[in-house]
Image (cartoon, rainbow, N blue to C red; front, side, top):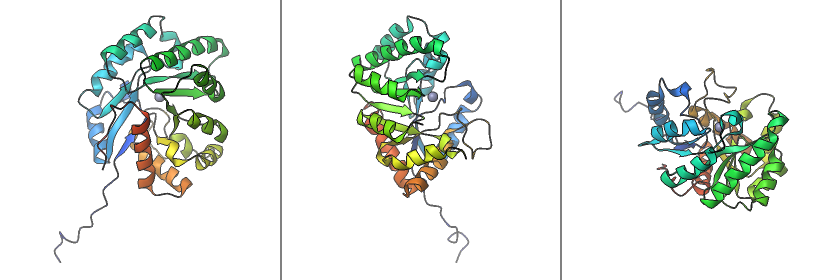
Length: 273
Ligand SMILES: [Zn+2]
């Protein structure tokens, strides 16, 4: 037997997509291209990158050109002090001149000071209306606000669906959002030792309604030694979900890919193995 034929070929990695990362953030400016080469060598077929402020949309759109990266455009509640009244009008214009796959990320974050709640609610509702008008799905950020955001979806008769990213609510809240046409984003939070409740919840929610995400460069999972999170974490997050659901890694990734294509604008279609 020749040494060449004795080489064991590792099975090919399944093609995967990170449904939520901020690959446009400055933390990736130094090595975005080389890191992307590495991600591709590990099976990454695409990234969904949501926008967070009007000032960052142009860079986001520019970096997605000629890459299998899709962008969404939105006004994130974290950056309330950076949003101006005319940014909704700008978003409206951008939807005519560009091709976001969703409006987002936007939403409600009730971990922020209560003095911001009214402005958050207004901004959130305006973006639901805009997404409805443009028949686009949404990428939602919700913290301590699942019931209220579900109520807003019903009140605005929003029917385009989307993704509730970094879901950490209860099984009931998860089912309510699924019923409203949403998929639930599952990320590195499930890797932390104390996240027992979240892991139990994920176990009880249907795999067909879960999408994998990293929120990189933030939300660094417990297993990552680096401070900067990366879309590469998808593989290990998928492993945890696979063990919770007693399914194969390939099943979990295939379900997530299918859900992403199902729920986001028709222009997202990744070439998957
Ligand atoms: Zn995010």
